[in-house]
Amino acid sequence: MAESSALVIGTRGSPLALAQAHETQNRLIAAHGWTLEQLPLALIKTTGDTIQDRALSEAGGKGLFTKELDIGLLDGSLDLAVHSAKDLPTVLPEGIVIAGYLPREDVRDAFISRRFKSLQDLPPGAVVGSASLRRQAEVRRLRPDLKVTLLRGNVQTRLDKLERGEVDGTLLAMAGLRRLGLTEHVTTILETDDFLPAVGQGAIAIAIRADDERAQKAVAPIIDAPTGVALAAERAFLTVLDGSCRTPIAGHARMIGSELEIRGLVMRPDGSESLEVVRRGAPSDAAALGREAGLDLRARMPAGFTDS
Ligand SMILES: NCc1[nH]cc(CCC(=O)O)c1CC(=O)O
Image (cartoon, rainbow, N blue to C red; front, top):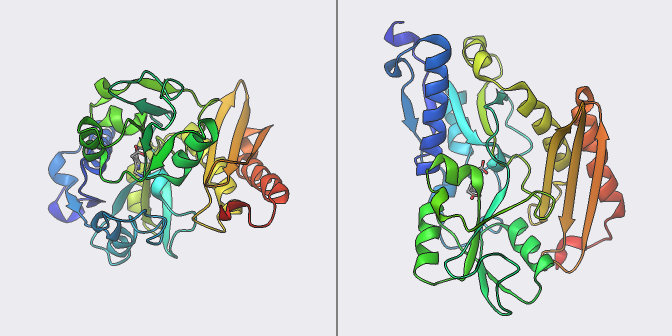
């Protein structure tokens, strides 16, 4: 392949983003027999990477990690953009589509602590740090007696803060820890029945220009259809509820036999009240199933539900 026929892969520069971009490169190499030189990485700094002191939800929420990559796709300087599906907004800019997802990693969250074996084992008043509104609300819901604080930074930074004793425990996605080879830090894995993950957790999305047939053909053999089905349900669920980026929302879809099951959860940020939904249906109706689950929760949510 000539230099001009290279596919430029856009990624953020964080260690996790790079691991995801490398996985994408490796899968393309395995599928097509291409070389690394034909799949150059372009490291793009996004607005989200420069915000360190505030919760991302306060700084404008989703889109902060994708805007600069979207611009690169649209101006032709990038051909693919690799994202954590969890960090993607529900609505993409005009002209950009998700070509598909890589096979999903572990969707579960992990509890990490130096001294305590589980969330249940933390003594009253212990401090749990997380930057995620969803995890904060889920912790408060399960343990209203704990102190929940904001803990930001990339995965390694958070582990360092835990090590220094700034918090007694934290929660991180198993997917990220596995991709970074950091699972030795995990204290307990939280099952999805007890601690519902974020929509899209564990999945890597590949975005392309909507009219780019070359990019679409290139990624077709590395796209995982079952992950696409689950994500169609989860993202439709989130779209219905996305009114406020300050709403703590969890959602996960998986196959149970030949049926697709979606579970959803919305919470008050203080965890004092929560609403759950479970729906099953045909995987061919994934988006409709997700939408119905979201509409069900929306109909049951009192006004101002997510304000406190
Ligand atoms: N918001 C940060 C982020 N985005 C994706 C992951 C992990 C990988 C994934 O969930 O797919 C993480 C870190 C974390 O939540 O622990």
